[in-house]
Image (cartoon, rainbow, N blue to C red; front, side, top):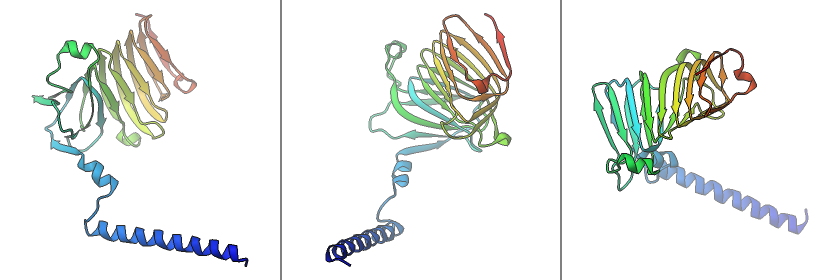
Length: 235
């Protein structure tokens, strides 16, 4: 073996041994609790509170509200030093406001809170959004398919499913008024009832039965796999 090759091999082995030693040292410290993983850090940025049985949700002025299937009801809020996010519960309804100091005029002018809230709700029936962004996740398979009704108003935005991941919905009703909705690929919906007024809809999901009602100021993009069974109702 040439001398130059030997030198390169020595450097490579030395670097490999050094990386292994660093990895083992960090792992030992992590096991002793001296360092935190990225997941630990991220989880620590959320504050969590249990919720009673919630059937209805109203979200105002929040840019990202994740609604996730779960067996227990709870809310997880991304921690911020200065926050006026407010949530209240009245009977079986959860009200969330991104900033309690904002007025409706503020929201109308485009003010909204760029903060993440995760809602784990096993039995939610309807979600109303005003100046808000909703991210709705379904079940992992057909046996855990989710049913829900979503009303979008005041330039709200709905994202159904997760891009690249299977999401299953049984019955989904979406009413969009001056808002938009996007349905991700690999999302399977047994029945979708969609009503759109002055709204934009982009669909990549597989819909087994679609009932569509929209005005002449709305647009919708439908791809081939959504054209199996459509019932269009004229307004």
